Length: 380
Ligand code: PMP
Ligand code: GLN
Image 1 (spheres, protein in one colour):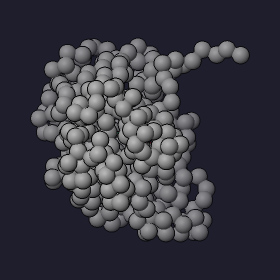
Image 2 (cartoon, helix red, strand yellow; image 1 turned 120 degrees about the vertical axis):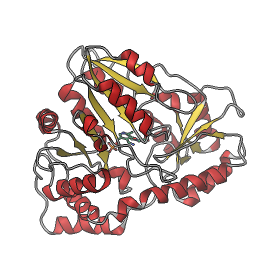
Image 3 (cartoon, helix red, strand yellow; image 1 turned 30 degrees about the vertical axis):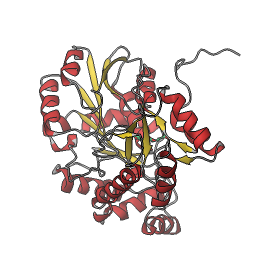
Image 4 (tube, rainbow, N blue to C red; image 1 turned 45 degrees about the vertical axis):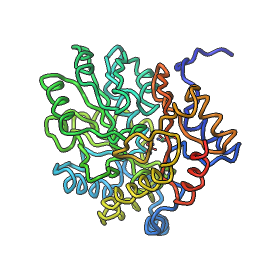
């Protein structure tokens, strides 16, 4: 039987490819982004208590109300914005699903969407399924800042959306207030919608504040803001996230989402609601990951990798020109198969495979794992 592919140029996601390779070769997996340490015991107890309490049937389509209320409180206290939990928040099975529903709900056939690359690998395929015309804008290398002149140059009357991600995967760069001012100037007097991927919102370093779209009324009024509890509570496998948007946008979002997934795993929602009641769980996260980043960089200090600055997220980029001139994909494979450390080649985050000879390492790992990996990497 023949069926033309809807995504003819898309293969298996790099995260699956590298994790499978790491498994097959028993390599230390610093590739796919997930912690290898347990979540807070209170989270596990809360989920189990929710099940025993009988919270085992469908939650409301938009999410378990106490969780939406806690999310609204967190947004209010963190970003100073009042959000209506009834009409402006939807809980989703991870951020990926929220990104998918947001794009599907507002991007029409032929609409232009400006995508900043490198980007998380779901954006381009999802926009392809929307039949969007994708306008790619590369971040500057090697500091991964946004070239706003290039963004502005790509805006047209047909621009429907701009995608943003801060703290940024894979680079760890973050938006600063100058970026926000440029963005405000670009979108004012337009109907451009912003899709802001803020899954690492609670992981920023050196006390730098996260510039959420929710802080700025001119941006919040036109933004889908996406986050993920997987990152914040060390449970990527629970696949629970959420989307925040103004009422009109959220209405369209829910029209799609109700037939995509309808609702999320109820016990997890109850458990996250309980955890959010204690803000220290997410307020302490930046310090926790800053210590991990610093330890990994300390261990790597004697290596021939050149570490690029990471200001947020749980990723560390490293240039390897002093070690080899091979393509990043080839080096990542060789590193996994011959040396036993898996990383992500950053070219995977570019549609055209731009290769600056950079690998991404995930430092959301135990100190012991980081030590074992660094012992190998510093010998290269
Ligand atoms: N966006 C970015 C930038 C990510 O790094 C990730 C996953 N690491 C996601 C979205 C997807 O998050 P989730 O696992 O909650 O779907
Ligand atoms: N976002 C994670 C990363 O960047 C992985 C997500 C996934 O495997 N789909 O590594």
